[in-house]
Length: 179
Image 1 (cartoon, rainbow, N blue to C red):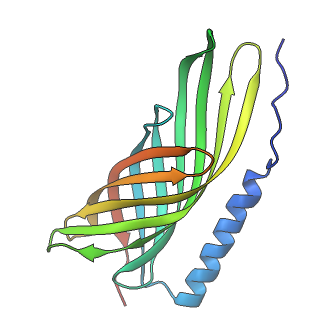
Image 2 (image 1 turned 180 degrees about the vertical axis):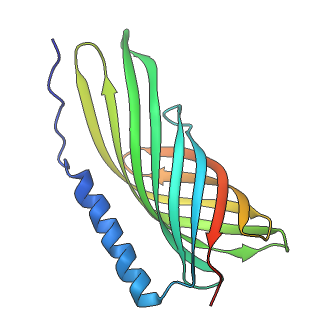
């Protein structure tokens, strides 16, 4: 018999994402972004042992400062919990800030600071559970190359009721030129 999903205090992930999008639009209009960039990447959550994909859109307000929204989709993985097989999957919705520090012509280092909302689903044959978690993101990244297509890697600590470690590796694609 399948139990209903356990409800948590925050059952409104769409509202959180909507607020993130509105804030990003207001910031973009107010600060007049110089250019945009899109990231496509693979992501690994070491704490939950989940793999997934990352997609993000960053607004570059100056040569050194950008803010963006990110979505991580972690694919389902089977685990043994208290002698029972469960399937764990997750979605993360983030808003992060980057401050770019050129180390050379080909390498750019950047700290990461932001907020995150995560929806984790754990399902077994007998029941399913949804967890809605909020985090403060801190970390660092590195961009390689100086053209419009730049490989990058980031290490993020998502700090909340528990701390999760994430590694993101992918490609940053710049759209438009600086004004």
